[in-house]
Picture (cartoon, rainbow, N blue to C red):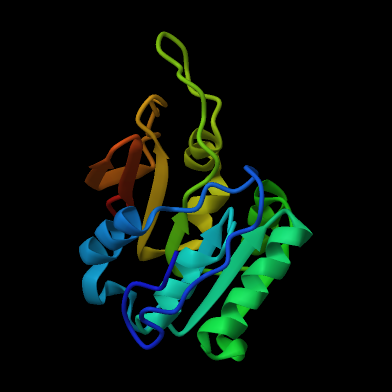
Length: 195
């Protein structure tokens, strides 16, 4: 794994040992960031289910102002911090919070924290034909705090498995869908009620 573009382009990222982390593949990340383009520049980013921190580090490399990465495992959080040091990006612009995503989101909302870009590629859910998904991706879509911590003009980028059929609540408007092998990535904006 490596940083694809920007000030830290080509820097290699460490991946925690074992099968507990499924890093977002370089080709999928490249497709995501090609789609985002300059939209990353000058943003405050929230990465959920950090794993290696590759998504938020890529954002910082491409001009994001700051990134907050939420990761439950303290072992994986150590790897994320090592990756930050290794790629040489400013440490003041990056924060790792060791916490469950679904505990962190209401705390961020209560503190009135908001982000321009929320990006998440959680562990994949199982096949769910004929029933509603119970995956982490579906739980993020259903959690009203995600919308609360996203600015009105912000973007929510969510990765999930092709086998995981998601139900998009009416609070979200889909703007793009990327497909790569078993990986799907959906781009969502908030639906703003008319005055």
